[in-house]
Image (cartoon, rainbow, N blue to C red; front, side, top):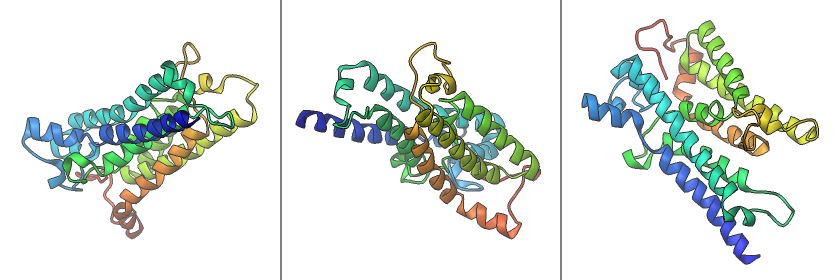
Length: 251
């Protein structure tokens, strides 16, 4: 029993550490300094995320940074899922009440990646706004979230012409969708394999558990994203937030 406790503690802390270190990788800063000899944090909104990198280096680079930031978030989740599912350590991740804790640990890597992205240890804790990390946690793991969050983002961005508002709205709507999926899995477990239904693998091979753990991490990432957009929120309320029709936009 004592051994199992220590292994669970190591797995939980290891997931947080690995997620944070991956999330801290500053894709925008690395690309900017390597190829353009510029730091995107010195321009416009002064953050390292994809939107600001796109303003500084061009749209293609912005899209590349967004993709890399999504991947750096999803990669530790999938890697730890494999370790905690297919290695001997999985036999120790059952709590005394029968709960299988692996999903809680590997989803926490996504939360830690978002924290690392916003406050990266490699570049003096001055990073992005967690939008790409939120998308990496959601749309790279669940087609349902991809469709719902993607529709929400495109609808708000198209209607209001504000990337920041679209990002904030998507985080809230995506979190609600995650809880809907979790509640379905909890209340109707015998209907079907909900993990298979909601994941990208469609049940063809083992998948991430998309349950309350997934929804909990979404719930914790969303406030971080909103907090990082607090200056945008102030400008939205004042009616001065830049729009996609403007030259610079905002994020």
